[in-house]
Length: 578
Image (tube, rainbow, N blue to C red):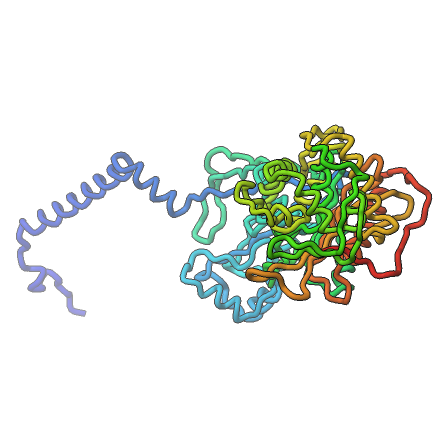
């Protein structure tokens, strides 16, 4: 082979200018200096800025949820508690598009594949909730799918063992575990607790790779012990439900109070709802009718009118009131009784529920005196009760009363009140003239509550005797009689308002009373809205509910029977003045 002389190449033989090599060396040197300067700026001058940017991209503050406090009944039985659950979330852009696994995921989340795909198509490609408060066994099945891009977060879920029986009393929480209704909302601050926090570093897949700083542990919520007895609550709800169904009524409510301490032993409404399953709920189911709905009380107010007259010395229990001929012309208005009762004693006015008798007794009083007594009993202002949505009702100022309004208020028309207010006002009779405060929380000592005197002890005892007569032979509430316990109470039946008048054939029926009559232990008030099965008087529809709830409640409380007689069930139609 010929020798190859590379130096003979014209390109290699040409002489390179000196300035070119110097330029290249200088350029390399300047680039190195720039890199050193940039590194110095990042590490020293702009260090804080770049640390912040790093934290924004990779550092996260994880909330450590606090366990919500339990809600207990007066005997320590669970009404609401928190159980561990999981929140399922996804990073849509990272989700593994495995059709079989996604179909299984949709099934476990109780949604259709199409709905799951819509969630994953969310505009936010970095985070989307798929489902909150998923039970632990289901969450474990989801984890076993090992589907990329699907993650879980620890949460708590509320459980309500008493279900629909105590729903309106206990209420429920939302998906973020905040109280929405009932005791859950009323005692939110005590139940909620305080969440903790933990600062961590996450990678781009959302996995925690390191902890930063100290962990702030969560503070769990406090337990709340309510005054209600879950056994009384369940029985009251069950009896109410059966009665509303039997009479084809629109709705119904029951309130049970401890007559000495003012504790709420039960508060039930029907229709109700299951706090664990709240899909497709209607507003009527959520409404706590016993405290939020107001209406004209009707004849339940007559004992209050009589008590005022007794205290004022205007009448005695034996004072004769002429109610003939069963109607009374008051200006252009005609007041009627269902019968011509003729001459009645004041006791007879309550026993027979005479509108005319109550009106004539009220004429002996002045409007201011009546208004002040109603106000002292809790009418016209919101109950001092830790419960959301409690209504004040309507009691117009006495100065604006016309003579006909003073007359109609005497037998329960022209004002409005809730069933709860009616039950509360009857504590004035059970506590010998003193109205006592009511509470949703269990009394720590169980001692009788201090009350505010409204009537004299003598007048209160006289009214209790009249209430016993009203629930006995010849009275309008005979079906309120119960086995072994003396009872007293007043039935009521009021036409429902419609526009500027009253609806035809639509009534509210109720019964409010107490037992045993000499030393009352419980007050029970019952309301049935629009009974539609042929019977609509309070003595027919509401009194039987009162009877069974009283008997069961006193047995649960361990109260000794005070009489050995059978309940007096009357087969004849019960009638009363509207």
